[in-house]
Length: 178
Image (cartoon, rainbow, N blue to C red; front, side, top):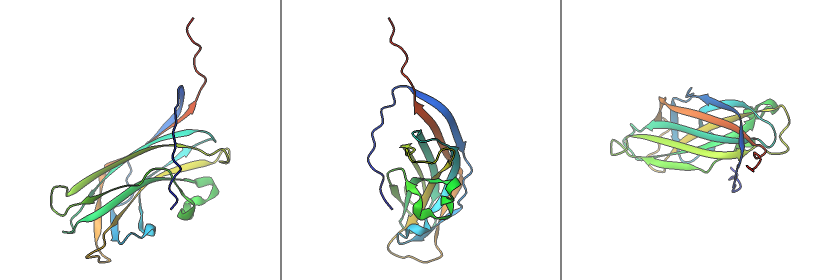
């Protein structure tokens, strides 16, 4: 999983091209594993029309509950893929667009229900095919290294989750006042 390149954006005069939102949490549970990246679950996803050079401001949050009786880690992150190029069927070509986030959920302790949020800015590459749509995906996984059984899960609290994408573009700065 390639980590995204460091980015710095100074958008002086943003022009909004639309806001896209969903609170339809698709996952119900995270299978606890020893860190296998193929066991990420899609928490939320949203199709967004994009053009090369667009900036996407992405914010997502979710919540998980640990009823296993053991400390369990949850990691979450944001991804993007080109739906019109058929990339949704092959997650190995998805692009990681955010830093990795994570926390341990304590068993029946001070953090039995754990909220997690994440945000990022991502610039659609110049070589993105004009007219192709992007899918922005909020994914999560659960992991631990001890007491692992193949049937243990962290519950996804479906009523707590949202994904919002603002599509913006740099526009011409207004003329200076005389």
